[in-house]
Length: 165
Image (tube, rainbow, N blue to C red; front, side, top):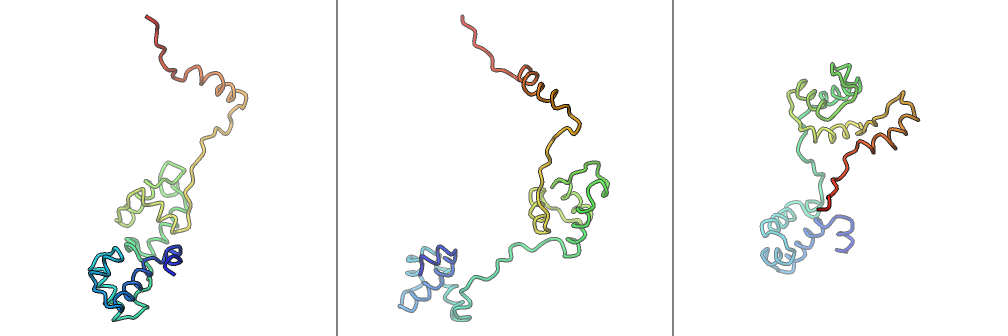
């Protein structure tokens, strides 16, 4: 049963239930903490929760994480801004970047997000991160191939040769 709990990711619940079972066998919270490899204060909290709430109290609840700094309305407004595009907002770039969106969030709502965190917010809104490809739309394919095979290798840095003395 414990092995299944570990595979399912329910090892935290498994530890809590084991603590209760060990307590019923007249083990002290100190002994239980040693057996489970958990802090004594944590074991005491589990046992107290079990006394107050029963098995339900030992189950995993939803982990909320840090609450959002944006309201639901502000999230909708950000989605509308992103949908409209950076040019419509007044930027010269035709592509949104995390840095630009973080700037918009700060300008509009006074909430400062690190650009590295913005992609998580966008993912929550249903947007995906795109990496633009740098292609010349009207490039002559023959000239491009010549440049890749001949010109670029000729100008690329080459390692210095060690001259014989």
